[in-house]
Length: 269
Length: 366
Image (tube, rainbow over all chains, first blue to last red; front, top):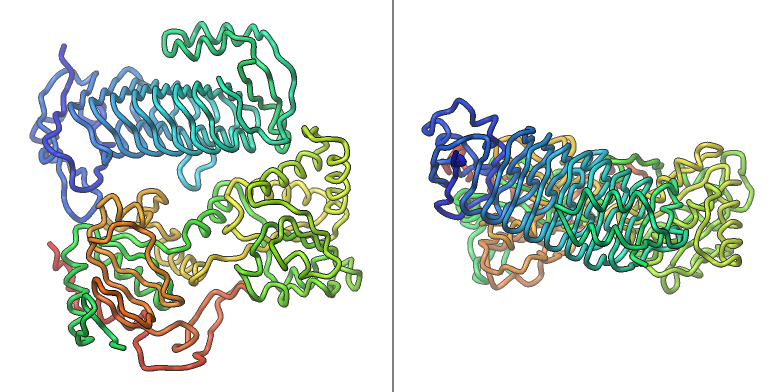
């Protein structure tokens, strides 16, 4: 059955909050009711009908024909079993606190993509902004489950306070990759700039190219890790280059010894 | 010079207030930025932002939020400068430019004198300065100076914390011995104090340092003194806190305060075109906005000696100079009244905004 589709009429004049447009929250509403939902976050009203042409379909899958860097909170609190596809860009906090399901974005995503993700599978074909999977201001933990694959570049502080789950960045990563990581895995296939893994407690950061780890990462030698190869097999369908990286001999740096020392940075040897 | 100008040409003050109200009421999402003001000015500005359903940001928010981020997502030990002066037997100054960020620091902390209270009273104060700049290295007689660039500070703190916990670092034996010696001094302090400014220390490094403070507190007492941002940042943040529950970078677009350090950052709001009118307040020193768009309708409240060639300009007095002002004091860690040293009859920020507010009718934009 064809997906429930929102076709973009025009770029919104202001940021909009799309958290109301997840499948479970649309269920049982008529097209007229949906068109009347308020999306605006400023004193200028922006309703669904002002921005989108709706064509009804199976609510299991919601499709956006056209995106915008002003689409905030798209797919927030998404539930397992549902899917959202965006043929375009999204704004801040895409997939925020998603419990499950699948979100694919054909364009770029703004800051705090996958923030607090609890189990959703996300794929972003373009670049993402700062704080990928990170907590919002004042929160204690970042992403706690799920898998996020970014085909392009990531901004600063990717994987901040990651608690569980897998982050794959196929392009470059900005400054302070994997800062304050509690646990979980981050793989970067491009270059990682600046400080890496500062205050990392128990997380694994895997880098295709070396980087700057500082004195609180201690060289533990090169290893053929059985678990990494098993892990590679499970990642093969989602990111072949990441799977290739994990299949190689990896040099392990233990750290950040400033905090706990149970984390690690693995680099292709 | 004129007290109010429009595009460089003199305009009557009353007309200027009316014109400012018209610009701000007509905007879809107006911004109150700069916010370099005393507490009364900040209160008026935040009320105006709320009335207009706009957003507000302070010009030193980056620094203020670096400290607040650690405080709210990790925790922070702090004390007042006076407590540090009275009891601090081991004072660790971190980073360059602390005397620039707080010109009265050396005098207030009395680093050359022994502490007067506590277990180490009348014993010489141990002072350590990591990465001082220029003359700061000689500013405190007998201080141990550890040279480090701004980029190296976070690594230095990390290495200290690793060695404090007895964990390994990837450094030569000689360096490790130096760090171990220093860490021993911290451990033996009876009332230790870190002093830093977020203008040179990023939030992650502050978190690293505060983590070390927590660990030191298992066996001794250790705390911190943070140096607040410029242009009244600490006082404005306090006012924002009691008025909205949030620090600057807060918006009222939906009729209630929402705090988002990314969404409501003034420079981003202007450069992205989301904010379509701005009120810029810089009453202390006439600092200019950092955004690059020159076409945004702009109202400037500043004590400028030359009026800007573009936009509406209203001359206001300087807090604590031309007007009595309540300001957050770095010296005492509390609000203090600073009496005007050279009073004039120019309007204060609060008076100017009050006059603009009087011209903004409730719901006029609907």
